[in-house]
Image 1 (cartoon, rainbow, N blue to C red):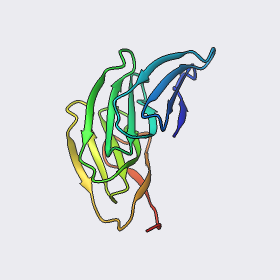
Image 2: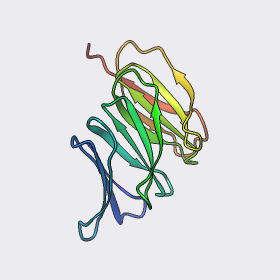
Image 3: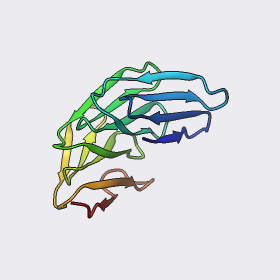
Image 4: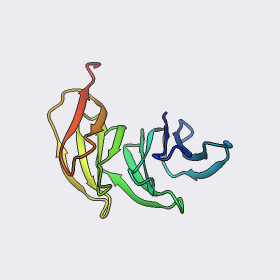
Length: 148
């Protein structure tokens, strides 16, 4: 589960084992939006850099891209063989990076929802991801879990 502030600091996005992510008003604690649709726990939820989109990653082996304003799921990203542990937007919000227990990282288009590349080679789970702020395509940081 996770909690993160929007870039302006007025909203908070949380993820939960209850299979949802929620958008909150940071000033008064009011729930502004609930993002449902995952079949298992939501491990992480993040804002796009312009705070217009949200990205959720789940134990159900998918990630979802959401419109913050409407709460509508724009794309369900299907292709990992195990739970998705982390996800990040690229600075241009045109691509996202997901990493999984299956030992892969995947680059996805936020426009089409299609997988553009799969990074193979880890023997264990890839448990965290980060995208360089000025990156427009492939710079990323991956950590491999040593747990069996």
